[in-house]
Length: 523
Image (cartoon, rainbow, N blue to C red; front, side, top):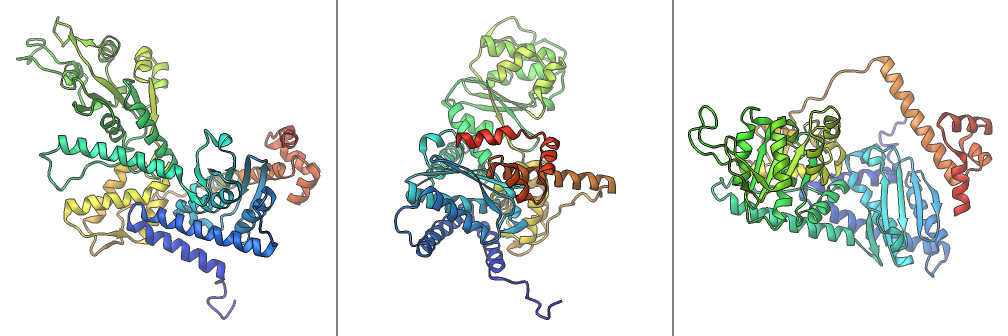
């Protein structure tokens, strides 16, 4: 053992730690600060790396594809990555990585992937005039590896997700998303202030956090769907914010000046659901002493949000189908047909297709409410949104309870990122509310969150270990096949095993060798 307690501290380790701590500090400063900091660091650092490469290689002209690949792989591999080339042509370069330069801690800061994107994209745009960087897989998102595509042809890049770069400026896509987000937020706040004049000032208008790619796609869908008359089905786990998305669609539509009525179908007794939705006439049943307007009539000209639509009774499903098809209804116990103009947005946390197969939900109604389907990701699928959600919730709770908490400690944020949040945003709000009540000072240092303590048995652990190792081995084998274009001899040398062993693994993982050799011919 070394006498020097800091013998393991290297310049690279120091800088990695510095960046990680910088990310933690910046994410406390608001929603945009962290992203702006990453973009600034990446853009300036990329210029420096390219200039250093040019000085060492004596290249003054624009870099060609081969030099560009050598540069970006060298940047990452010299600081601890394990990047390698998968494929290349004049329109697209694909690289893969099995070890993040920032180590396992990158899982706590998936935003750092944007740094790779901006370094790669900025250098490519300066030399090729255009770049779009698509991070298909990411170690930071627990995918086990990183797959990055750099498109240098705008036509080839069409239809692919990612950030665009022209010259040295990233972010056409970021700018577009930010502007879209701003439009949606403005519409929602305008609607909130109009409909909520009597609500206490301690409450704030709803807001959508959408820093993750999946949520940004939801924003884009909202803008497309909102102006239409199409019915919308929103699917997602409990607590992901389905009603919030429905409100955003209404706020961005031509119906925004009319009512938005939200009803939880599962909270109304089955015997009353038809009356609640469609109204009833006087004397329709015992206790019906006057005419009652249902939710459909109260939502006239606006939007009706039916949460837990899967819980509707068969009779209510039949009535709902008629309203959607014919635009008219009859109150319970009534004989008069009433015309209604209401947009339907439904939501469920169930698999409606499966319920249809079990004859628990009408097939024809399912297709009527499912003209447009939006699937809201769980909180576990959108780790990029976590720090911004935490900051937003803390700001609201400060106002509600007159607290002065400005941030959470690094340990608290690590706990938040490590937890899987089965209750999603609603559970996160609940935990933070419980914790902030007992917080003192400007930083929340304790989180009232219990992690599962059940340990897996030895047999389960062995299964998990074997499965994980098999995935790693298969991933490495596929990468080697791509890199060496299906050349078994070179793959065996790369993996340190015999050619016979490579063929055995191809059979084990059902990998078709011809696919990789065909790829070589295409390239």
